[in-house]
Length: 211
Ligand code: BEZ
Image (cartoon, rainbow, N blue to C red):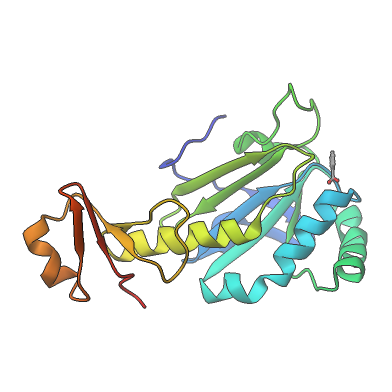
């Protein structure tokens, strides 16, 4: 099944490294990140899961629940987690789905047969509290993802959800944002009292509203 931005994230029940879960119950009213990696006991995956574990406080601050997935077993995940914790100097607390029957991988289109018939690629989805897919990333097995970028996108999505703003190229938390074109220029001062610039009628910026 293919998934696109704006679709409802499919629910599922699965075995994980912390026990059986229902995905929607796991997410509750929080934002979510679900990401697949090709296999346990592989070097790039070890660094990715370690990095994600080290960013726990950043995900918590943004009210984001994180869950990983590969097609290996719960037993494999559990003993690999010891290696991740040891080598990456961290503590993996988020669950890793043991998707041995590839049920979740199929639901989220995480197996790309021309890359590998059997293993998941590096897919990542950000899900909003209303269970909609907000971002999809797909990386090849040989390239570890940038989790600072994942946090940056979450910051952008959360700003858009709360204010009528978008974020420009290479935007970082604290920098000016773009006022959505649904807001008339004459209505900007009331909505964004910190000020604004009209660079073009379709390009208006304002200081980040929540800073
Ligand atoms: C890795 O995680 O290191 C990896 C996994 C599959 C293929 C290539 C690299």
